[in-house]
Image (cartoon, rainbow, N blue to C red; front, side, top):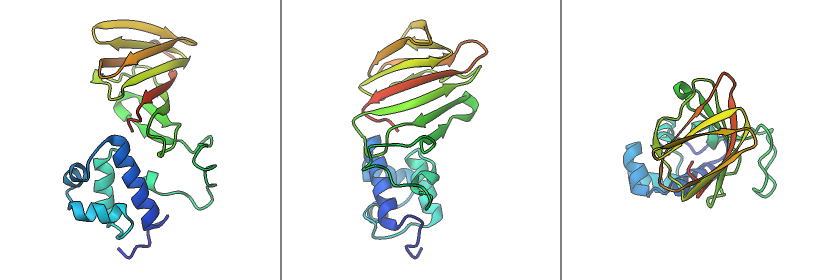
Length: 191
């Protein structure tokens, strides 16, 4: 490519580098997963070269991020020194068959913690996974959340909170016929 990606090669490279660091991955790990050379990835991160759309797609897949996260609409206002994420400018992760959507409420430069708005629709279920953060907590804003931590399950209702120690087996799901909305915080950032 000629370096004319929207947002500029340097800006895109910085976003890729930040995302890689948030995920705690090395250049080698991302390059291998993206099936590109370490040198090519390093040059992309430093804004020295612009990847092909194919390579960019592979990098984003390796970083578990939608390619759209790299591009900002020209009409979109600049964040207030990176401190504010405006309503509607949240990054969105759609988990499709799991019937769950996560809105990332903190920006990419915030690596010490991450706040998300998690929406779980009826029959939505995270399936069992191991938490990646050192600590996670949340508060149910709407609906009823089923929560399993290791071998213990409980119900968390609107207005109630929960705390999960890091590196635990966890599963959560929607209880009933109404969606669940949870504000979920993880330290450090996991996406």
